[in-house]
Image 1 (spheres, protein in one colour):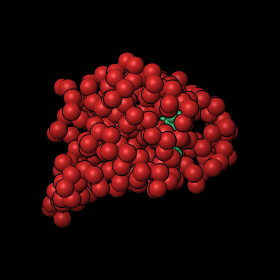
Image 2: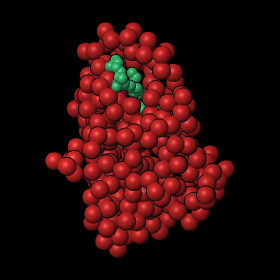
Image 3: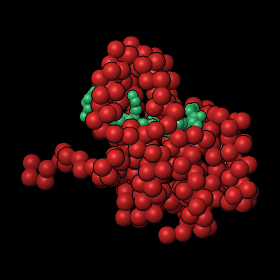
Length: 261
Ligand SMILES: NC(=O)c1ccc[n+]([C@@H]2O[C@H](COP(=O)([O-])OP(=O)(O)OC[C@H]3O[C@@H](n4cnc5c(N)ncnc54)[C@H](O)[C@@H]3O)[C@@H](O)[C@H]2O)c1
Ligand SMILES: CCCCC[C@H](O)CC\C=C/C=C/C=C/[C@@H](O)[C@@H](O)CCCC(=O)O
């Protein structure tokens, strides 16, 4: 399905999963705003992508998802340049158990901030034209990942926030779908220097390496393909899609309210 005429905003767009998502969106004819704190990397990537996909289709915006002011300005600039926003990929994230407050701030607060700012432009009950928001969770958002408890908490938060927003949107008529992507280990920069990232849990690095060996590693492009599926399949709302070397799986959650009780 072509995304011609649609505009996307991607956070954490310069490297890893975000970068792969930018490319797949451009390959499918969307216009894309790349938001990232890596200004020099963002500018050179955008120049290269502009040559390949047309400079009118790609825009770099220097934006830290921790800053309400920068994030708000970036959405405005994307709308000024492209006319509207249809697709948002709240993807920026870090793994650092030592600077754990920053991990919460970027991974969870950044996703909530990006969602609320996006809704200011997309919410049908406020003059928007709807769309889809995909948030980056993790397999660590589906089960306890003992080597990084704070990272685990942020990703559980992302998955739960996304699912709750999906039902809030349905009940309230926002016209916006919400889904979370939950990858296993992905070959990116975040997946390097693991002992340092684990902080006080660095003694679990060897056990983590064993888990990686057992589970395997996927590419950023495999994650981007899974995200594209949830962008284009209009039946998907409130989903958490796990992406693993053996394939993708939509997660079934327990229904905590039984109709019989
Ligand atoms: N790599 C994995 O194994 C893996 C697995 C599951 C989920 N994830 C999640 O995927 C997302 C992307 O991670 P990745 O592996 O591609 O990492 P990465 O380090 O390769 O890329 C992260 C990008 O986010 C940007 N970024 C970091 N802080 C930012 C901020 N405050 N504001 C804006 N941009 C910022 C970086 O500059 C970089 O371009 C993260 O949310 C991560 O938790 C990663
Ligand atoms: C150290 C690299 C971190 C990359 C973080 C990414 O978000 C990828 C997370 C990938 C897999 C996580 C799996 C978690 C599984 C648990 O729910 C459990 O089944 C495994 C228990 C083993 C353990 O906690 O060590």
